[in-house]
Image (cartoon, rainbow, N blue to C red; front, top):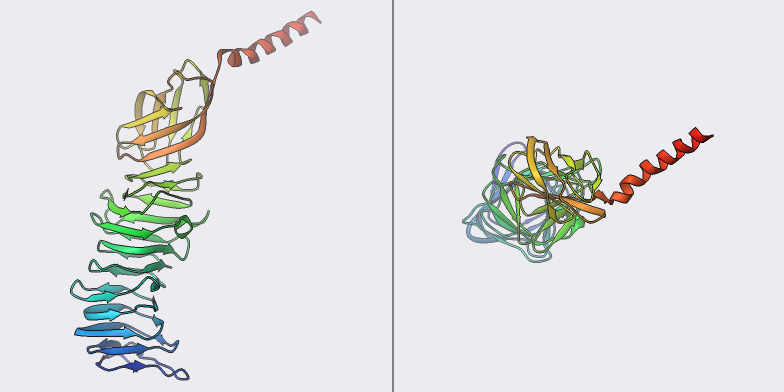
Length: 334
């Protein structure tokens, strides 16, 4: 079948031993219907435009193109849907799911939810989510992909485990806002630690998201996040009396405004912005030992470098010099 619009108001069943190929046609379902795929792929776009009616799936459904629910009710309870294109749910339509339903986005997609709740959503391509909504569970099915949240909107994740968001060493999973410099809000259900991620312009609420192990990147302007290991220090030791000048480096342009640093839990002094990637400070006095350095940016972004600075006692600093002096003295005697 070539390019056309097919309107249907009855049940559609793909024969298990046949082929269902609509070519480049858009199929629009306008009446109460049940869709039975029998494992066949809907080869192009599918639109549910059944005002006052319900369209239900009888089994799992794979759509090669876009899925649009513009009117009526689309009930996928108990079934899974894979979509090759975009997902659009109009505000006036109803999208019925249950806890066992899942949606998989097979390629690069734009999702417009009309404020509806989505079931488990797996992204295998770069995905833009345009309207605030609740998502039962968001999973990066393929590493190295970017989820773009609409700026100024709030997106609630009902269930979250670190494995769903962790990327890989050469393929960081990214979250960004649709507008650079303006945050989108992602509300998570509990404190979670992830790795191999990159975040920019994301406001995390509900609990703290720790992006750790030095494997991740902050691209700046994030809130509610704790980044671990993404900063470096040019000096890592100093006396317990403090006063050591240290320059911090962070490639995420975190020094666009004022910042605060604690060393071993004590406030640093003389904090100066050098440029967007560098800031300098002086260490406070502290007892001997190895401590964490914590940077808090003007955006309330927290970046922790564990065990980054070691305070040495006066004896520890003098000992190497005394040892060298004695060795030289003994040589002169010989």
